[in-house]
Length: 135
Image (cartoon, rainbow, N blue to C red; front, top):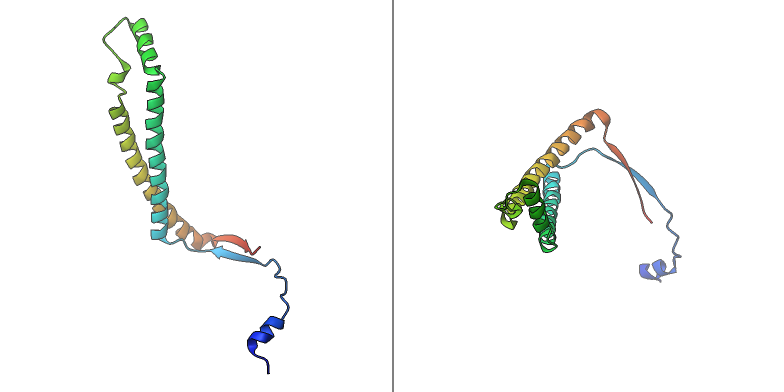
């Protein structure tokens, strides 16, 4: 008598063909979409803050602000104004932080709105047809 394991060993492995499955996306979970949009907006805000800080540092190190000061002094004739009064690192970083927080809030709210609108439109349109295959 042979065991089941021996019978399974004797079986030849059949090549698995590519099977395609077509599914319809008829519901997007509200809280999952809110969490996903929050994470995407958070990543975007972090990129915005880091990029702004790097650009400011590069502009400061290359002397662009000094050249703008010279140009403004030549054009206006006033020697007491500098660009750094308006564009110091603290002011630029603070403004970017506020814009990043607004980006985070607006991105999260837009993700929630898209989720609700998609779930409402599925009732009319029937959802998205998505195809999957195994390779």
